[in-house]
Image (cartoon, rainbow, N blue to C red; front, side, top):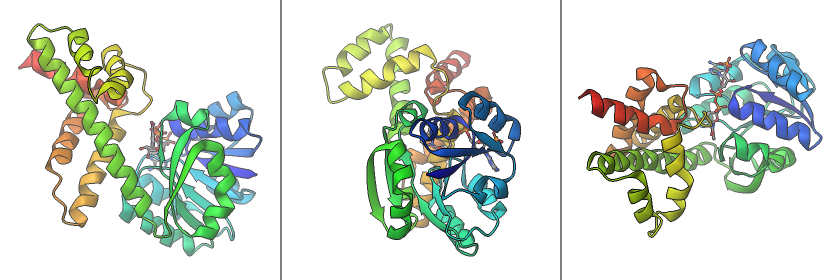
Amino acid sequence: MRVAVLGAGLMGSAAAYRAKAVGFDVILWNRSIEKAEKVAKELNIAASGSLAEAVSKAEVALAFLADDDALLHVASGLPRADGLIFANFSTVTPRASAAAAKVLEGRGICYIETPVVGGPRVLREGKAIALVAGPQRCFRAARSAIDALSSEVIFVSEEVGKASALKLAYNNLLISYVASLAESLALAESYGLSPQDFKGLLVKTAFKELAERYFDRLLEEAPPGFKLSLAAKDLEYFCIAASEKHVAVPVACSAAQLYKLAARAGLAEKDYTSIYKFLKDVGVRR
Ligand SMILES: NC(=O)c1ccc[n+]([C@@H]2O[C@H](COP(=O)([O-])OP(=O)(O)OC[C@H]3O[C@@H](n4cnc5c(N)ncnc54)[C@H](OP(=O)(O)O)[C@@H]3O)[C@@H](O)[C@H]2O)c1
């Protein structure tokens, strides 16, 4: 299959690696061409700084873009490309996803949203969980590309926006959980308890799996797998999506503010688990 990967960030690079590993013909596009060229050289694939060139021979475009603006910027920058499938793996608002679908429809491009649960490491191994919404026929046409990246594919709806809503619902839980874990750990430590005292309790409870997965990542200041700025963005999008349906989500919106503060304090490019470091530093300063 011929695929164009749009976005050479952490996720796009991982997807390009996986697509090449399963034998696809891959071309990598990025807004800043230097990044695409660097990754493409490492993977021995083609790179382009031109969207038109990147999709000219592709059957499916796989988009891994930061946010709503990036998605709409790329969708508006694409030329007419009859028959191309645009699979959007980025986490965006349902509204932006529907807007991108409309822009692309006018250019003969069929849009499906395919947000994934799982970070770059999981994607490189082809083990993400893909949530799909959009026309069934376009899903079928892009299926082998989605399968290459995922161990589970859940078709959510023909209605674009529903997979994005499901992804935001999931990410709110995960990102808010990490902030709560960080707060609880900081509180326990302030009373002279060790991280192991707290983890020792968690692993005896329903939080066992989550504690084993995230506890050490908080403490060791892991290299970025999921940037803190994107976690802040996801919570903000969750709040926007909720307000459009008049759903009250005060916990998520207050967690969004916390992550935004941390991003502004210089942690935007760090892993989102750096929220623990931010809380500790704020605590020390007060
Ligand atoms: N990392 C994860 O664990 C994870 C997991 C699931 C889903 N996601 C989602 O996947 C998407 C990509 O995440 P990532 O971790 O790969 O982020 P990333 O490393 O920050 O990469 C972001 C990409 O978006 C591009 N971009 C930003 N603004 C743009 C604009 N206005 N126009 C065109 N391109 C633009 C960047 O291009 P430049 O290089 O030119 O800045 C880069 O290629 C996000 O929506 C994220 O929420 C991430």
